[in-house]
Length: 392
Image 1 (tube, rainbow, N blue to C red):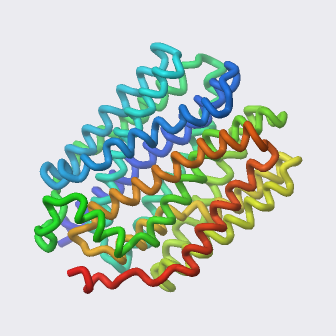
Image 2: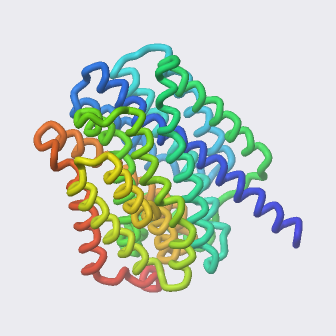
Image 3: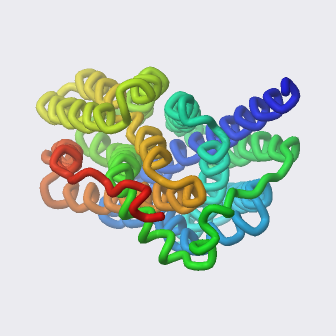
């Protein structure tokens, strides 16, 4: 019994380390490439469109991700994802081109999605329900820590433009190697054999049951991508130095790091929906404050930190809520949809942010308040999701 428990604990922490390094790579790449393109005179709209490569890659590969996971298991998917990410990161210094870098971001999106989908499904499929909020919050915390540290490595570009990419590739390689210490496992399928061969049927059932939970990943994707990809452009245009930007952006992530586990434990006790509403509403107020106080870089940093305290847990809260609402044999589909909705939000963030920067620059920070406010109202007035029993 103790051996099994030790193996489960080892597996959990290996998965946590892998996604933390994946979060680091994403957190570094978004502001790094945006800052490089801005200094090269690339327009805000093109800059934002280029940042979407990561999430387009995620969406392109999503329909094809579940079948290999069910057939081969978690470990081979993680290994394949790691190889794609490492090779792509090492390719950035080879040729500086908007189109080439867009293609590389596309491949990183594919590799990162393989890593996140496999690790996240492995966690949600094996953790007991009464500890799910805590475990998913630790998982989300690890991603947040990586994402917060990532932008701090952007100034390395001053030493050599390719250095941040190389550092990220080396760290990814070290974390990726740990997966070889794990025994492979395959997702449960017995209860849902009728759905195993029909991707569209599984998606339909899962969306009917748990779509309110998918608003959390969408909101977090929007915030994360736009803040990391487009806020550096907004800041540089408003006279905020790049060194200060590399502190302001992690403030949001650090807020999420502090509140991630407490909010996860709270959701285990009082339910996911009330905590999800708290995250959306609190984030909306924080970003409204950032817009009002945008003349002060310090004030914006403080508001970003407060926004992170409330909204930095939206992804993990959404995943835990989805796991509560979804039958176990559909958890791979539910986790896949969390990734897809996160990507939808991540695609919308840079595109909308880039458009606002080109047309109404001073309204940029209000965009976050507007999106969070809309999702808050949807969550408040939405009808209760259908009971799982009605779908069995």
